[in-house]
Image 1 (cartoon, rainbow, N blue to C red):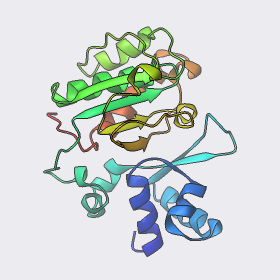
Image 2 (tube, helix red, strand yellow; image 1 turned 30 degrees about the vertical axis):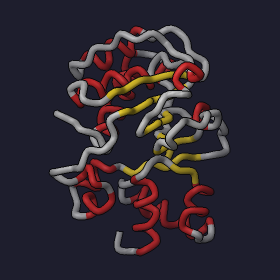
Image 3 (cartoon, rainbow, N blue to C red; image 1 turned 90 degrees about the vertical axis):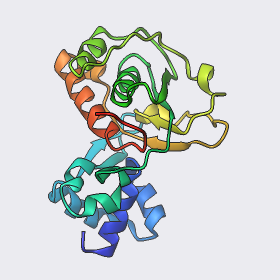
Length: 220
């Protein structure tokens, strides 16, 4: 993290998952140099990469804030890495394609973690029936999930502080929202496509870990 460009890349990734071309644009440096420093961060175990499920030629990079929080850099990279974060967002929307797994799981986990102090909703661009393994996976965290899949058009006029996309496909079709909420992207694989309860358990664990670093009031 001592390298200035590496630090800038980490700060960009602390705000959400990014593609290389987005990082190149954000830091104003050549792609080969950005790719080199991303490799250094990956080799250090601070950054992971996941192939886009929208365009397989793209790769999304994710900063492991939990690992960063173990070091001195954590608090500077993300305010939630401190012992006393400053909550700000109280209305959050999670979106994915089907609204049957990732986004309702995130909704249930955030509602549970915040003790219902956050008004949280979820929706999908092509909603389908709630997956039973999504219910089982979040139940292991003490979160209850009873959700009627909702189309993105139903919530697009609502006012939110944060709108968090959980899959690469839905990120490309997000509508504009009133009030200009902060947009965050988390590139998560579809557990239903992978198949099996273990895939849903891994998704729940990743969602719960990321939720801990949202700028929202959390109880646990």
